[in-house]
Amino acid sequence: MITPKTFSKKLLQWSKSNPRDYPWIGEKDPYKIWISEVILQQTRSEQGKNYYENFIKKFPTVRALADATEDSILHCWKGLGYYSRARNLHHAAKTILVKFQGKFPKSYEELLTLKGIGEYSAAAISSFAYNSPKAVVDGNVVRVLSRMLGMEIDFHTSAGKLKFIEIANSYLDKENAGAYNQAIMNFGAVQCMPRQPDCLNCIFSQNCFAYQNNCIDKLPVRNKKITLKRRYIHYFYLVNSKGEIAIHQRVKKDIWQKLYELPAIETSKKMEFKSISSIEKATDLFRFSRNSRVENYGKTVQKLSHQEIHASYYCLKTTHIDSKIKPEFCFVKPENLVNFAFPKILSTFLENIINKK
DNA sequence: AATCCGGGGCT
DNA sequence: AGCCCAGGATT
Image 1: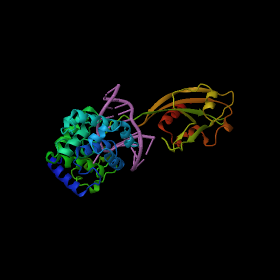
Image 2 (image 1 turned 135 degrees about the vertical axis):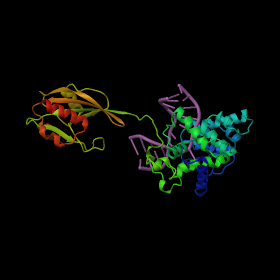
Image 3 (image 1 turned 180 degrees about the horizontal axis):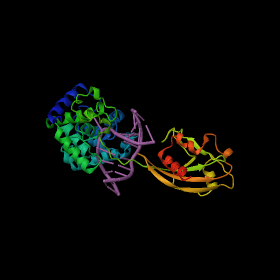
Image 4 (image 1 turned 120 degrees about the vertical axis):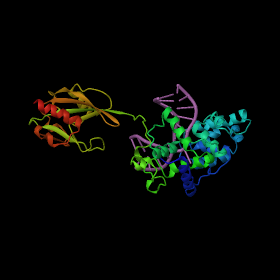
């Protein structure tokens, strides 16, 4: 594991040879640093650049900002998103005038009391402006440390946040807090990017846990709950007068692409088809004679990474469907079904059906 | 601890 | 279509 001292030395060295050109680089006015930090919250530098320059031009000081109307501040923020940031800036500017007598707060703790300034921004402003030994922890830092040290901790939890702040501070170069904080974030943005980081040209590749263990794309870990999509697929076991089964190849860009399936109707909500007419209402793929009957053959659920497939099986007893089913379907003899690739959700069902016969 | 806030860039 | 971004406030 790389020592904090070595890490900082190499990082600051890297920073010198990889300068970034943005209007807030090297800025020492805490007011301007503050504005830049808030603009850059969840916002890419390239996107925030012009907003920063316009904002500083229009509101060059804390007093100018405090005296402005909320409308004029929001107008300056138009199109940037997260508009509470603009309203909080206004609120905090007035706080600075009243509670801090117009003097910009210097300490991490004082900065935290301002609306719109959280742990990250307080650390950033106090270290950039005053070289206070507080480590910033943003998405870049989480990513760099996760990969370098192999930290399998989810930052988006209370405990994970504490752990990352602790580790980040243990690696912080306290003599050069501002430069170090700048450097590690730049490094994350330019070299150790979320996707396809430039490991081949990375000065830390020999020290990097993720690179050495080939798990760059696994770190940082995020246990973010994926929004589960529920799908309801109704499969119809259709037999024609020759005793053949209707099947169909899935061609859409979707799960089970190029696999075969029974004639199906997908619904987004849970339901059950109880009559021929309800089926014909839901699809134009097949039509049935009036004496047909539908019979429920049970159901099953399959969980995929992002989806939950609820399958219902129906058997259609009918006499004349041959000419009333669309040509993308074909009919195969039951004994030939094994020659086609069905998803598991269907192959299990088909095996049961055939074995019962 | 989970949810919301927003627009843009990327694969 | 999802994931991510120099996060923080609210519930």
